[in-house]
Image (tube, rainbow, N blue to C red; front, side, top):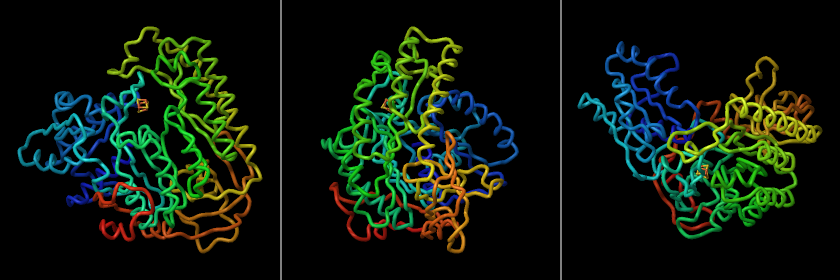
Length: 478
Ligand code: SF4
């Protein structure tokens, strides 16, 4: 969500006449888009601001802006601790950044503007996309749940849904710009529609994405088990461009801990959804998030998490050690666990998950995969002379670029190859590729073109294929 918000901030600044600074030059404006979910976010922010202070002193006119969740939380505390900051803006008023920079420059004093609710939906703002082949599209912002470890509801507010027509028009605009893959984004993506009273809205949205010509891959993140309904599974299975990949946070395998987390499902419901997903899509890759060491978690609770992990057969898991987030209910709960206990459980969980991931990856050796060639995801590619791509199920595959290649393989192109080796966190395809398809996304990548969406809100609140030429009407062009 934050990465996508940053694309909006870049798009707005470019529209206001700013140009991107060269990598090695000293910029005139620095914007920090902060996240309060990560541990030590405040230490890192104030550390970075401290480093910038002498730079700003030697660069007259330089402006520093701080936005995002931490700004929403700390507000004028930021300019109190770092008086050399020029602008502070929150999660509800991203669109104010250019005006606030201008006002701070004009008045020669800091501008702090934090709103309590959404000013304009961020998707109505222009965006400067980072990827030529893959794009984020928000379906909603905010969350109506109250998980006790999470700071999101207090900083991002209640869920606000976009109109389906607006979502689909943005998807179409990206596809018109050559994008092949879209990830639908929401804090609780499958609660989509609750604001306008249609509980089946998310499944319908997936099916409508299936009608968009040229859109090859649709993903979404993150669904909540409570709202995961059968119609979404059917839409995933029956819509050819929806990838058979599901990232669904488990958080804990213990029902007692889930209750304390105020997660309104229980482990059996979670596993049952997974069974249904696998019956409908046997090739589905399922990933998750798990928190270890939630306050009051006993060894027995933790063992229940291990048990669910064994049964769920996740292809991978993002595992976190619980640590207090000030302002969340869990930070005040009794039974906060000592670091050593949390670390020891965490190590056991990671060892088990690695074993499971590896086992599942080994089952894929010999299988043909379609890869969307990626940029910057294979850190050792130069050394190994491989390229890297994502399979339809989201797995990372390092492949040997040999075989029937049409001129050159670029990020954004599609290749087909076979898996020759498995590791816990990636796959390797060292044989010759069987096919390579050049794409418009690859052409754009080669030309250094990136999609730009104007953000103008268009479209009727209905499902179905968007009306012809929405992108032209939106003025969406590089
Ligand atoms: S569903 Fe996700 S975003 Fe919402 S409160 Fe729970 S953890 Fe936070």
